[in-house]
Length: 140
Image 1 (tube, rainbow, N blue to C red):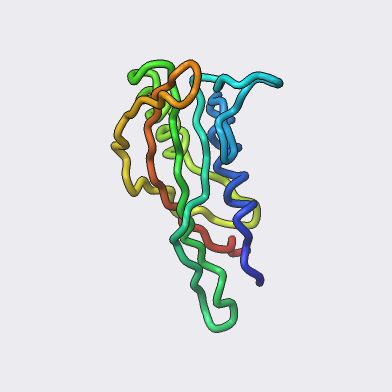
Image 2: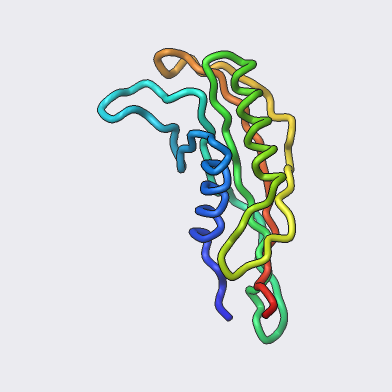
């Protein structure tokens, strides 16, 4: 068995968030076509450094411990917190990765600080949360 790449795990997380009715950006905040403002509310997904792969002698890369960040964005601080809570609830319902069993999606930093971003127009508020996902191959 070969190492399951980041794409399958990342897409599963994005699909889970979208399935919960959230507007999701992959690596950047979503924007209307041809416009500069950020669509709010939304959540932005980023894979982050860290995590590991491990396994058996027969398949040393079968276990995945992936790290990712969710940035909840809103027009006001309360909206950013609300989107962060909705994203957390969606992940608590489980994530499905084809051919894998996702054992757990766990917050590393569940109470992300809410900050105002004045570098975009109009300004937005955002809340950053760090997560980890554990997966291993499905057993037939």
